[in-house]
Image 1 (cartoon, rainbow, N blue to C red):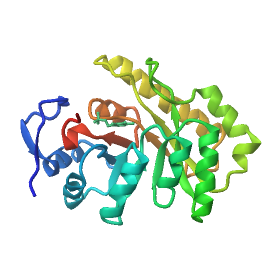
Image 2: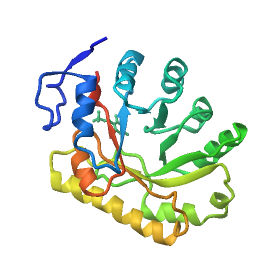
Image 3: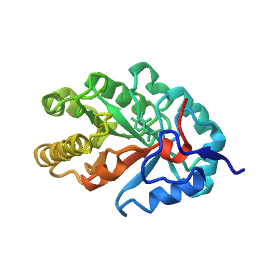
Image 4: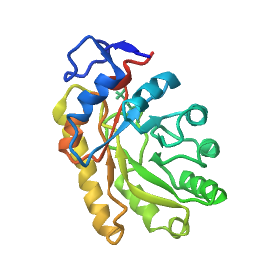
Length: 240
Ligand SMILES: *Cc1c(COP(=O)(O)O)cnc(C)c1O
């Protein structure tokens, strides 16, 4: 199959061609990543055939934002895919993904972490998670601030959770063309990561991930220290 997408809609400036295959897009994006940066191909709303095409081009990490959609796709696609939950996650939906999810990017409260821990325990596994940090100037973005994260990390309740592992932070920049705003927000996430690393995770080498950067801003994010970029439309084309 050779799916082609019109890249004009929602086109990042680094993609100049009108029609490119998913494989072409992946090659172009991979060529711009530093070696230590992992690409999460955000496949939400896209059919399994598009994911299979990216898989056949070598991509193994895919990001989804709806638990049931992720569960359905995981059931029919290759078992060595690493599924990342990137969107806001409701506690009552953790059960759909707990058996297989590789990383949850979007933990924004202790009660959610509790539920993830409970479901992970049922499946006899440890689920790695990122704490979502509020870095944007917009009202609509989920996430915690520094004080809330400190409160969580120092609580007895948090320490009792044995089946979740906090491996880093995630943030979304303001949706703006102003690169300096975006750059400052990413820099603030990296700065908070450094502070938490020395205060709460000094002897935890697994605390190492910073998930930031999407189709429109992943190059800025990489400059500011991203280790995981979440790229959707630049790979799969625009979403409706
Ligand atoms: C949809 C989504 C992305 C990907 O967005 P694109 O602009 O299509 O690259 C990244 N992160 C999150 C949290 C998303 O919901």
